[in-house]
Image 1 (cartoon, one colour):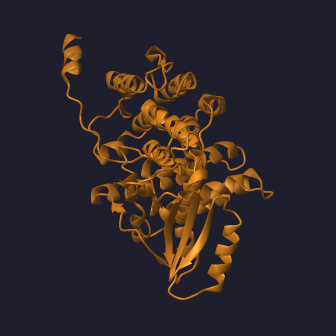
Image 2: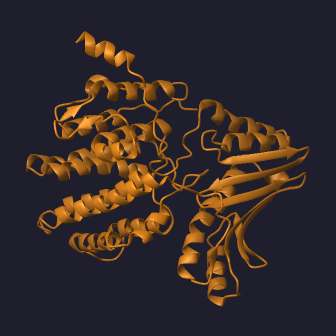
Image 3: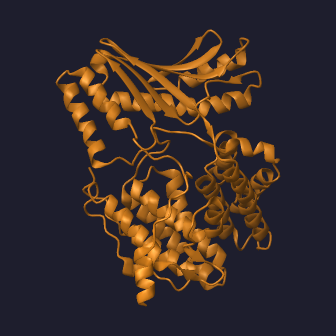
Length: 439
């Protein structure tokens, strides 16, 4: 007992591999960062426009991601904002704030492309498309007297997120268009790409193979959970980009179609969509594992009750499968509860970090292949590294106490007898988290 205690206390913390999981959430700001929004708003009301804009960009900047760069010379401010595969470049002087992003190169004029852009213009609230020589661009501008923090945030967010999505869609739909302004994108290390390719195939293959053994009518609900969970798992663990991400999103969206289809029909279509992904050649997958930097979340934050309700539903819906000897479906329904929230909402940073621990426990071999030193759970022996798990959770809670003073975790609530009971107890603890008082 003493050897174990002192061995754990003296154990050096292994550096975490530089691997990105899940979608970027801008719901990750420290109390000091959040305060910059109030500073920017007060300065704007006092008509100190330049100082207000400086405070706004300080709020927007993620110091870890290095997603926003500014250069002020007197009254003139130049800024750069990164969002996925796109770069926003902007300028602010004494009169106006302007920002522009290059989406694609159009070597020859195209009526179908122009029609698409005209249709897209009607869906924009703050921005507009433009042409500069042979470049398709999007622009945002505002007079400095009306460039309050709210307008800047939502205007630049629309510009960034729409451009990041449309560049891939336009180039995919119109073969003569060319990618442009992507030099900032960094490839992931070759080893990481190979691991992600391996598990991309393994996750899909394991799921569709297991589904093939099930009664498609009696088990329609469980099959739907497994297929949706598969999409969310690929999105979270592999962090694909571009066309590959769009095809995963398309497979998931089949379930939520407004067309009159039975659950069995939706399951069949989703399964076939994942089979198509499984049969892709390596060269159709590998290019979409790359590093990008983001500034804005593509989804919105929600009250913690929304998260809690989703986890409650998952916990209730897995009981039949657990009690009727379908433990893998039960486990994946619980996973679905968390990854659905990560996919659909902009989550607070500590909650995102807790989800990483959950996934590290449920997919230890994947994390080991990526270079994570510790196995938090060994499926072969059903052994949990309880000390390491509780230490990691405690560290997360402590790091975010300043922003969320009511945040607490009851370690005694976790169960370590098997993976399903652990997952169920983990979700119950997340449901009880209190993010009230966050600045």
